[in-house]
Image (cartoon, rainbow, N blue to C red; front, side, top):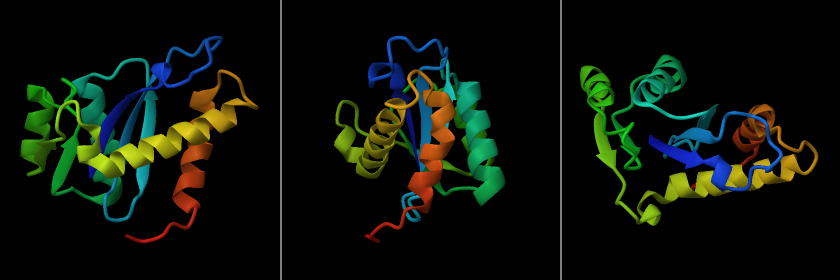
Length: 145
């Protein structure tokens, strides 16, 4: 299971967007390629903990390992304690080398591309378009690895 923070505001959000949410928290299951994502104005350790609990643990069970980028919210004492209590091993991708977490990077690229296409019709409403993009991603047949 990979967790990534994406600064969507820096990835092509419409300048006229009045939405206060600029970031995506994205989780990708390496085996099934299933993706969960939520939009946030900022992402703190409590947001990551709540996201993992609600979108991963309660829906799919406890993952063995979470591979995260090196954001401070993933390396906080609170998030480490949460993972420790559930016996989840924390691992981190190599700093400044996003290719080390290739599956998450590929997922992020696909989500951003799909959101940009949707924004052509719905300027500034990427948060509202996110569920439709996730649905399309999750229901599109893919080639197994």
